[in-house]
Length: 321
Image 1 (cartoon, rainbow, N blue to C red):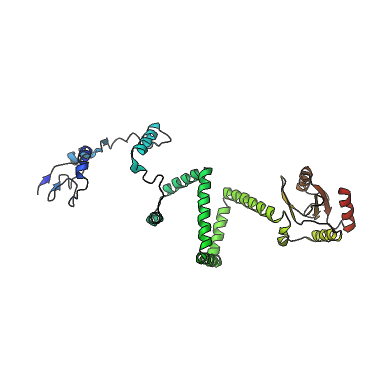
Image 2 (cartoon, rainbow, N blue to C red):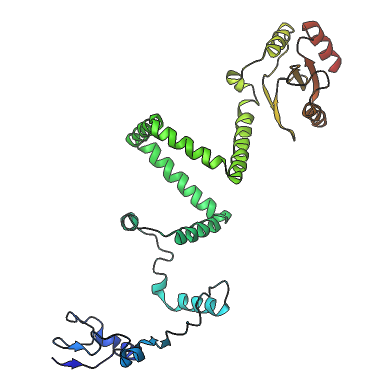
């Protein structure tokens, strides 16, 4: 059998690249004619010739690292300039820049990624890049608007999908295994102090917005449970034919839900339980809020439970206004 003593180097690849483009080579090593075998078949680095040729890879000694190893655009100016030059001179590096992919292409790309495993290191890099992009307010607004429009249109125009999603959620929530797993997951997350603090702040902001909407005009009264002192105060105000809003959201520094607001007199009325509000001194937060209410322009009256009636309410309101 003839041996074809020829090695394709970087120089020969570059020299013969155009000539080899489009040619169909027979099964075997590129550059070795059919019926011949490469000179180094079956040999290892123990052979002097193999060892000598394996030292180099594309002109770089393998024993020595390339100059840009572990360097990035952010840490080295040479890498940055080289990347910018490549992006400007090589259109194939950015074939989709400024172009919109069709729905068919997006579907193919999505299907192509199904089942692919992503390493933990890749996940961290993707997460960091996503967070950095999301910090850009312009990017955040554009993507957020697109997501909102897409989700709303899909949800609005697809009745079958809405019903399927609703049934799926009902089945999932009613599944005892899912409930147990969800509970265990939440307990585990709640042990993390960072997650706990974020959740508390988010719940606080959400509750505050909800209260501002529901209790600023009296529309939240239907979901608010009155205490016995509040029931007594309601009766007194109704007997006196005084208009009131109960409960009422007050937007001050230590914002909260006040018991009663008399819009005709710009008056806040609080009915304090002796146990919860530490009779007779009162809680410190109550004194702070009373001061903030007065600074905000409200008039304030506070009553201890079981220490007022219609007559005392009438007299104190008259004196206050």
